[in-house]
Image (tube, rainbow, N blue to C red):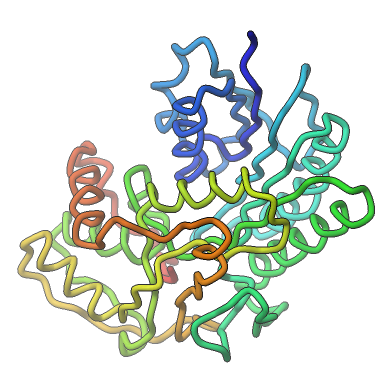
Length: 327
């Protein structure tokens, strides 16, 4: 009996590669797709030897053709860190709009269920705390973050249009701050930035006074939530993240304690439109999916630090000059 087939876009990225692992483990035939603009083949090279994994080097903003049947389409292709989407703003907008349209069209043709990776960034700098799915957000569409925020908001609107007009089975996951192995040290987000600075013996950079909060979810927990949502009967957005909230100053202190470095924290001006608070309300995930995170932050941080330590020292590269830490 042939295996059910799933397409995962952004397969060579941080989250996409972990999803490839999970679906292989669950017995699916996985088709990974990535244009490698921010992804890294090393994240999935362990899968190339497998009979039930194949890889397409392709930009989903262009027409997508995948021969054969598909059970699911998971759209995770997108720059996801400020360093990336400030460098390639138009590609970020295109993958969220044209790429989503192409994936939805493919799912419709194949009669496949489609899951899109949305984000807590659709809430912008929230005026409601914690953020629940009914909150519409506080987003600056023409600010530096707008290319990512609005691409994701459009992505949700397009997905709901296909669901309502074409009857396509769709799922929307709003992903909050996630961390774990295979993150890039220089991708501009707080955790790899702090650990990278600690590895290089540099002071840890906090923007603003460090009182802004984030909620960090370990990648294994996130993947479990996504998998449950895909298999559920629920088509409206669902927050998946860890409601354990911490200030960035406290987080930097945890990284210093974890790494045993003697560096201090230095403060720089807060970037434009940087969210002051970020914490998911996961009531919907608990009630509908029976999901909540199980990995304690201290355990997840230890695993992530060990991963970064295992990288060749030459990869502990200095942050780009335009580096801004915005989780």
